[in-house]
Image 1 (cartoon, rainbow, N blue to C red):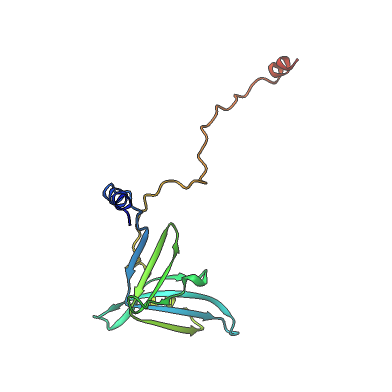
Image 2: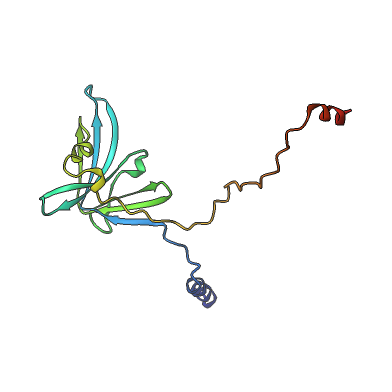
Length: 163
């Protein structure tokens, strides 16, 4: 690498122009990939449920869940860190969730709904939300300034002007 390339790279990092890591990274104790089937054995939906271990209760409590909308959301083996991870676009942010443990279940009930009996949604520790300070997208429409609206006029006056 040339000294000029190194100098430019050091300048960019020094000025804080380096790209921001917009990925929200979190760790949970267990990831569950659940396949929910109806009474006829047809797949209704797939969901990923994230759990934290509650030592005082000696059980896993649901932290959050997401419907699987794209196969890219499915948890994958993380050979670099060990365990499993899932990464996907979650609203305005990209999420990366890591866990040492995973389980895959096939049920005719929704485990997340059952877990609400043990820990109501309002008491869950949800996934973090990080506000991203991004510039507006290039294709975002900029609101045009509002033009003054014509006032209601007398129809006879308008007819006189048109003549």
